[in-house]
Image (cartoon, rainbow, N blue to C red; front, side, top):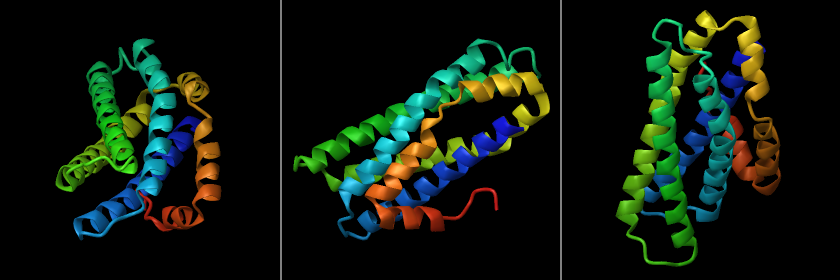
Length: 183
């Protein structure tokens, strides 16, 4: 159960960060200029988290924790593919943010569209976690398998959130006020 609690907490934190990013996206759509450094900081946080989470996720699937379970292989393949595609999309967004911060000419319409596409894709991924992966793990993983998964998960997410809180207190306040995906 500790595994699912950690996954749900990380999931909730990610949903809150996406909410904050969606507010920045709305600012852009309204023709105002948001704090691109702040957006970059959130994107860096998410990339760091995803980089740390990718190996345990792939290991979970490759070590066959989910294979042999009903629909486990199909679910794991889909979630892994979606995660990789999401990571690629976020890296491209990160590179575009770098260009903006270096005062390169970037068509804002394209950036706004790419930003929205990323937000939509990540929201869809979180929905799949909530509706498919979490119930699957709860139903089919034994206590020993859940413990094995817990040991694979990165610990850095909370320390990275602390850094975000210290560097951007207003951003962290927005993050804390964002709605929980589980309420």
